[in-house]
Length: 172
Image (cartoon, rainbow, N blue to C red; front, side):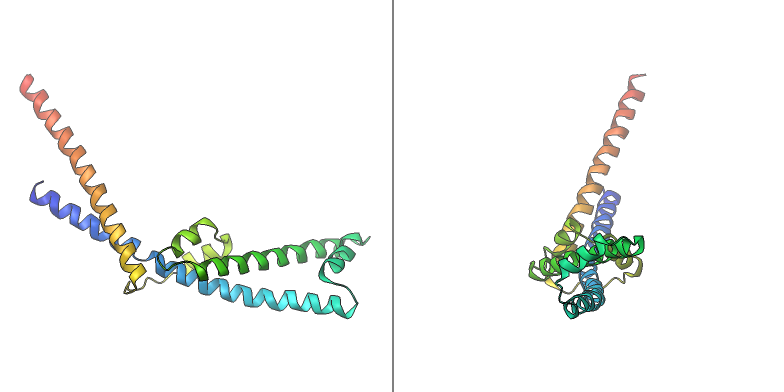
């Protein structure tokens, strides 16, 4: 490998390391955002549960009351409330999984089961962080090796094409 190729592979490794080292920071910012969403949904769900209890109903009975209504608005409101409750419970589950995962595994947990809205908003507002945590360093190393390997493979391919062209020119 020539000096230029070595420089390119090192730069590619550093670029990969820099990008991948941000995975734990993104997972942390996502987790914080999920916490905010859960806090807001909790207010809505608890208010619904309280109102249902004031009328001697549990949550499912209250939802059934909405569903059995002859009023389209009330039936739609019941569907909306069921959707809110389901999202709340899903986010709680995601928060639990993110909270119990090893720091290095959190980005994988996030990618496996992310909430589309929270993920998009986290991405929109993402602020890179300096990867001083163990997980950040591990992901940085993974990215460095990945970037280096990609650059090295591309370099091998480029050398092979150049070598083939030289051979064809010499044959003519």
